[in-house]
Every structure is written in structure tokens, then in C-alpha cells.
Length: 307
Image (cartoon, rainbow, N blue to C red; front, side, top):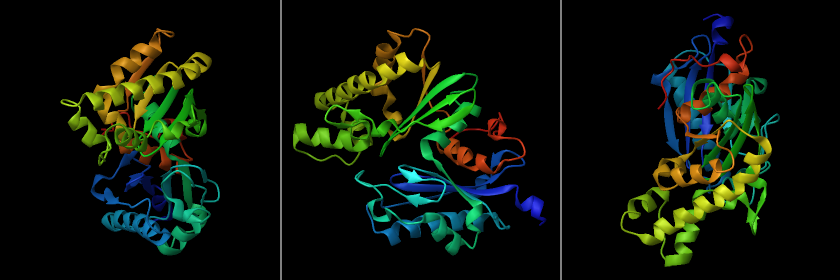
């Protein structure tokens, strides 16, 4: 395989709070090579060795499924993180505490045998929104606010296809920061505070919601908090569209209509949409950094199917 052809391929990964998804991206054809898709569980509260071993294993499996040389790696990574140097700055967020201060770029370079300069990191919310703007729910809109609701609260802002991380999760909200209110742990903590019981996740609460007034009340409280937090941002920045992704978005039936009603009461032209591409958006958005020939704004094939 020629060097030019080698450079058409990227091993891309989306780092979540409980898993990693990896796949090889064909930059020439603007597509994910489906046969290489790999998803492994990750204990984000495990030791540094456990976390890094899981990440490396997923990248290696995607590479092995592809069966040809790949010398470029891209990762969509939650923050705070030193994206240029590949050093984790995550602390006090109840996830990935063990890798604080570690140089992930050098680690992956050594275990994968890939030059450190060929390993790129991108904020996960930024990578997610890049994909959705190009070929998902944000397509055709000039100003797009993207938020991800899951293990953490991610946010990014796109104007004319240029996407940047917003880091709204670190913004003060009530007695803490936004990340503590718009993430899975808020739901679990609130349910425990009210009932004294533990729930395994938001999906479990959704199942309870049909017969539990308490759970419905918790979702109502979440919706009120999120609309209050976003309202000032909507008024100041005037996005055309808000795109919502992340695992909590799967519970959109519990909050989307009310959230839309509250936010559009002051901005009638605003649209609120659910993300369309799933994990594919972050995988492609991360890999976009290597597409120097055509630029990130046309990285996707417009016909690329989402999850």
C-alpha cells in the first residue's frame, strides 16, 4: 500500500463515560468502514492501567479488523483535556480521575506503534457537532448550538460550519456547575434524595416513569433547570438550531416538548432537534483533523447513514 493510500485512513474513536467506540474511517470515500466498528466497555472510575488498556484494545481491534496499515489516530475526548499535547486534565467530575496528568498521546504512540504527531485529539462535543452540522440535524443552519447530555454535559457552537467547544459544563449554575445538573449522575442523585433508593441509570428511570409520579417530577425538574440555563445563551447568541445528543436524549419523550415550548417562547424561529448520526458524528468529526485535502466542512458523504 502506498504512503498516499495509507494517509486515506484514520482509526477514530469516541470516548464515552462508560465505553469507547472505534472504527477505521476512509477519508477518500468519506465514510466509516463498518466492518471495523468496535465497542468496548470502560470503567471510568477504574485505575489508569484499566482505562488505558481498554482504549488501546478498542483501537487495536479496529485496526486488526481492517487488516491494512493505518498510521493515523483521532480521538473524540471529553474535557477538560490538553488536546494539543494529549494530556488529561479531568478531575472532580466522577470519571477518569485516575488518568489526570497522564500523557495519553505518548502512551498510545508506544502501544500502537504510531508516531505521536499522527495522533490527534478533539473535544467530544465539538466532534459531535461537527458531524451533525455537516450531515445531521444541523445541516443547512448557520448558527448551531450543540449539547450532549450523558455522563457529562458537553457543548459546542458552530457558525458557518466552524465548530468550537463551549465548555458550558464548567459554567456556574445554582450551587454548583452545569455539569452537575445536566448529566446522568444528577438524575441518580435526585432519585436517591427523594426515594432513598438507587437506580442503575437514566434508562431504568424511563422504564419506571409510566407508573412513577416521582420519576416524572424529576424529569420536569430537569427540564425546568435546562431551559433556565439555556435561555440566557439563546437570547445572547441567537442560534438557529439547538441539536441535542447523548444518552439522556434517548429519554426525549420526557422533556423535549416542554423544553422546546419554554425556549421558543422568547425565540420563535429557534428549532430544537435531536441528533441524527449517533456515535458516527463524533467519529467523523474527530477524524476531520486529518482531511487536509478538502477541509472538515465536506468530510461527510451527504448520503452517509446514521445509527
